[in-house]
Length: 266
Image 1 (tube, rainbow, N blue to C red):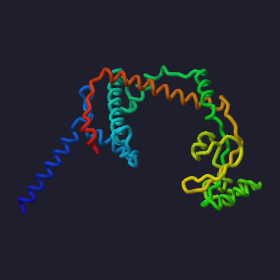
Image 2: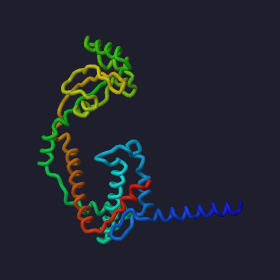
Image 3: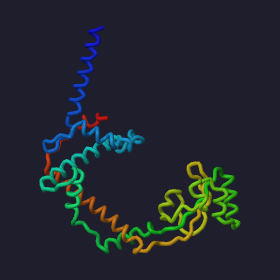
Image 4: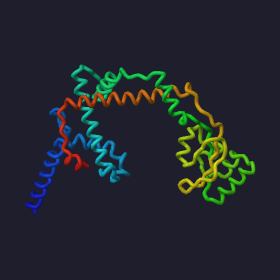
């Protein structure tokens, strides 16, 4: 019995020692600095829930999990390169993230958006700025839906019918009102081309029969959306500037990745 216990303890000790060794292995080397299995597993565990339902789906021959791991590791490599660059430039901060953010702000500070760019974007995406008040009545079966639609066609008030018949508890007390929304966005949601004021035919949506009312259709002016367009364009430009910067850092760095080890990390 004593020999069995000793043998078991030896196996446990060996397993523990191997785990320490395995966790210390480099998934990647960046200018001689390791990104270890342990560091990668820690980062992966913090975000893994985001891909739980799609892990095994394939895109161009790779599983979503494989693609996600590659992207995560590349982000970690970029962060290590940027941190080292920031420290060389004498940038200080509360922590590594703060230091990296200060470097990013410095390297993308030249980016700007002109009024001409904003106006051009607005003209190219004008359909996105057609808004309307959207109402809906949700019903549990086709018979009820046809009955409500018939009452609407005879002139009954949409909001009154929503309050009485709709099974959507989130909107029925407000007469079916959802909000003032982009028509193109809601058209895509219900697969129906909403263009003008009026009431749709019955639409079957995920087992629910839905009737939609569109009111107060109008296009938001450039002044109404100028700030949001500027933010959209500025964000895109900053992301491009950041990519150019990290690409230049990677070009001048010595980076090696252990793909077989990467794919086996859980």
